[in-house]
Amino acid sequence: MLAYHWRAALELVQASGGDIGELAERSRFALGHAGDRAFALNNYAAAAALFEDALALWPEDDAERPNLLFRWARALYVAYDDEREVALEAARDALVAAGDDERPRPKQSRFCRCTSGIAGKVSSLAPI
Image 1 (cartoon, rainbow, N blue to C red):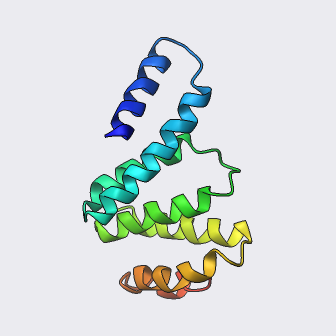
Image 2 (cartoon, rainbow, N blue to C red; image 1 turned 90 degrees about the vertical axis):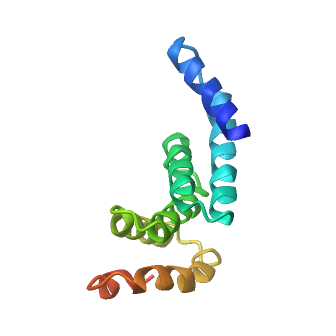
């Protein structure tokens, strides 16, 4: 519910031509948390949409972006969305580029489970 209100406030400020600075930051965190909640409730399409909205507000160089990108890709995969393969590849690339040895390891098993169902793409996605 908070994500809805933050998103609405953000849209109003954007429509009025105002500065979205701090509002965008609060909105992206609220959207990410709402995506996690939707995923936990098995509403994968809603989770993917919320994660995508959060990604649109997330700075490209932020250290948490690869994690959010993975959560978005996982939601797309479970929802069997047409964009799941592209999203999984982008998430893999972002996690590898982040160079964070602690974070990618726990995700490897989940990432492999996600990619194992994509026929013909496992070999191109497997190396994390």
